[in-house]
Image 1 (cartoon, rainbow, N blue to C red):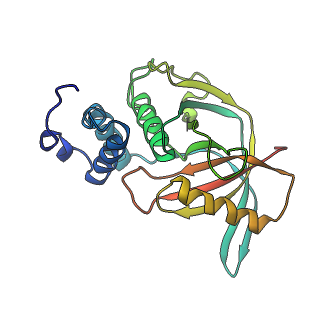
Image 2: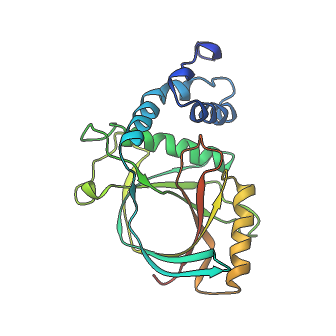
Image 3: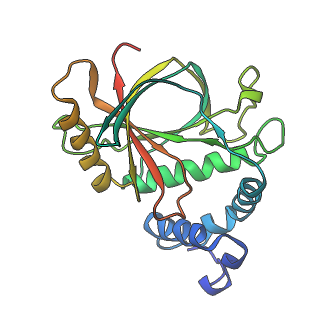
Length: 237
């Protein structure tokens, strides 16, 4: 066990409180013997991202809306096309889904906040997109989760390279998805009902992948009622 400061000395007061506590709770699950390390390491990136988000608009990942399906004024789901583009991606395989996406996002935050080949803040884009694969029996997620950050338009032609070797820059092909919005935390227990609900709305179809889905997240982990989307991926974009 390393000699880290006791919990009451961790500089949580310098961070957005809900975000800091969320990261700390995730880190407890990952490393119960050393719960302070991740939070201390993330102080700078969290401060930078928070400050920038207060003064700058977050860039939306571009897409074209193909169709909108409503019932009694409520949007049930939407079909969109996302163009090809460059994404910074990282795969984590922690015990729980929420641990994997939290650890992946924290590494991407460092990349966004100057740990890159140009040494500057890159700008935040939304959503952050997590790719999940189902187990063969369809009753749970495979361990490895790919978390992806869309590079801002300024860097699409010449992307900065990450200093973290766990992060790779990928050119992704165009993507056609069926999306449905939901709110709250994202865990395997909250995502599975959303997958089942959207399948009920769509009915049986061979046009969508059955074992691959994406979860789009628009808010940081410190927000309890954050906006999310489940994405069904069409086989033919």
